[in-house]
Length: 297
Image (cartoon, rainbow, N blue to C red; front, side, top):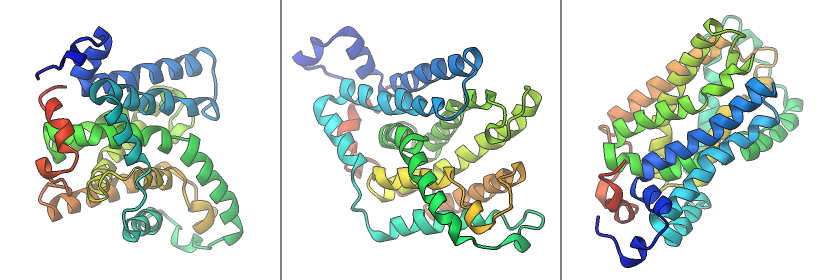
């Protein structure tokens, strides 16, 4: 890559980050979050809420802006901000993530024993659910994670590895980023020892890999819309079970069914798009500012 005079005068650390944007992004996403979580969980014995809400913001969120600034300068940061507020993408995409995605998650309840008989919608629970949805969307992960995983990493990983393998890499790293949280007893059904944690974490990792393909497809088809990704992530985090199936717990078996369901969705998307997941390659509007980094990690 040919450097300009201004680039040559940059701070060596900034230049190193800019020269290896993907590697820098994942290091800066993992290191601060892991340090914060491990100290909070193992040393201070803090619970998940509210203390772990800061982890996404000092990890993927901050890393996306730091590395974009180092790699692409102010123009890149402005472009990232435009992506994060690009909400005009067509009503069908909002219907898909606000109706289709929750509907699929509720269909995943049906294979559970006694779930069909427990279908008793409780409209009175909708208000409390809506408050929880907004809280989780803003501080519970989606807003802090998606600028990094989707708006920064997804286009670059696709440029480097293609949509299929690039999404696989992201799905694995996305799942690994959550690993310290499984040290909290009860988080996603994790137990108090290693043997009781491996099984739920394995299912969670499989789920993040599977659903990453849906998120990549949404990213590509909505031209990198941040709001669509954030809303979709929030619906995955805040279960509608208390509203639609009151009395049915968010069990480990339910998590397994979700993993299988989204693996099927991923397979359908890959077959329907012939592995492209809506990616337009070098014809994509983002390609010009990523060409310089397509051969670096």
